[in-house]
Length: 311
Figure 1 (cartoon, rainbow, N blue to C red):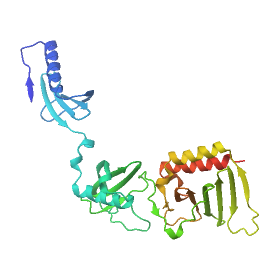
Figure 2: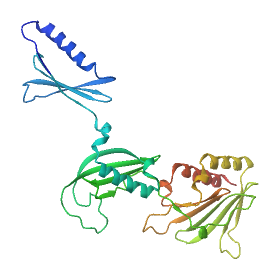
Figure 3: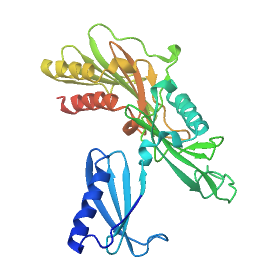
Figure 4: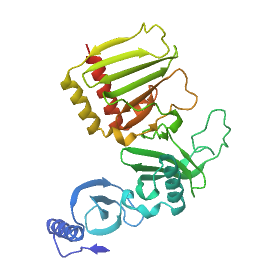
C-alpha cells in the first residue's frame, strides 16, 4: 500500500495528513503499547524512514521516504513466542516424549514453554559426554524448553527431533524421584513418635537416628554403638512441636511418600537422609538437597531449624 502526496498540500499539511494515514493503519491493531523508531533504506524506497510499531500480538512496520510523501506498510509479524506452529510436530513430539519419561508425567501435563532455532557446532548438539567423539559439523536444530509446575527441562535437538539431548545445566528441574522398594523402607513410627531422621554415609560411614517425641524430646543415637556412648537427649517446647507438625502439613510432606531422590551417578562420600513421619517416608542426600522440590525443601528446613533450636 503506497500513498503519493504531490502538489495538493504544503509541507505542514502533508505531515498532518501522513500522521492521519498512520493512525488509520494502526487502528486495526489493538492494545498498542509503544513505538520504536529506526532509520534505514530499502531497495524500493530510497532514503526512507523505517518505523516499527510493537503490540502485544503483532509487529507493524511501515516505510516512508525522507520528505514523508511516500508511505508503505512493510509487514505485520506475529512474535515468535506466539507462533507455536513453527515448531515441527516431530520435534515437539520427541521432546514431550523424552520429558514425559524423565519426569514420569503424561505428555498431556507438559507444555512447551519456549523454543528457538539454533545451529549447533557439532554432532553432539554441544552436549558431549566425557570422552565422547563428536563430528565437527554445523547441525541446524532447535532449543526447546519443556515445563510442568516448578520444573523446566531444556533440550537440544536436530532439525527433525530424531536426535535430542537434555541440557542438565540449563534445566531448573527438581530431581526425578524413584520409588523406595518396600524391602528397604524403615519400620513405621510408634504412636508417640512425631518424626524420625536416619542419616548414613559420608566419610565416616556412620549411621545416626534422631527421633522427635510428642513430649518434645529429641533423642539421637548412633546405630551400632554397643555402649550407647553417643546418645544425646535434648528438648523443644510443645509449641515448637505443633509448629513443626503444621509445617509438614503445609509442605504436603505426605505427597512424597516412599520416594527417594538419589545422588547423581558417580557421586561419592555423600550423606543419605531418610525422613519418616506418620504419613510416610522420603529419602534424599546432601549433594542433591538444593534440587529437591520446593515443598520438600521447606519440610527439610523446618526439621533442621527444630534441631538447631533444641536445648
